[in-house]
Image (tube, rainbow, N blue to C red; front, side, top):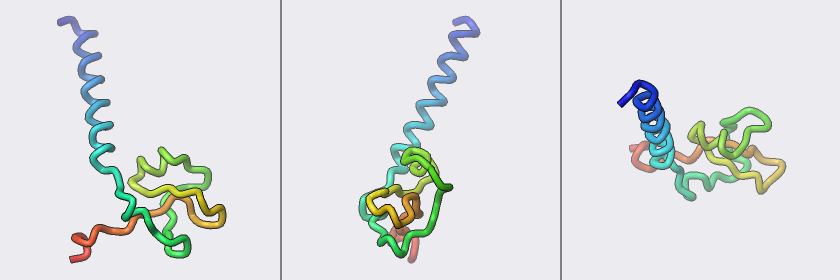
Length: 80
């Protein structure tokens, strides 16, 4: 296998490992069901849904007056 092919295969493996990790870290609907007044900002103004998700946060733009990118509720196990 020549050097270019090796580099291409290595890049594909690295990129696929990142996308797999993001899928595993997907937040549940329950974790993102935070009332508008209780949301804690997790992103900068104008953040996209994918940018918010990449930070491990929830995105909900249904209420224009609420924070759209916010931290999820913690798992019950984390509080024990």
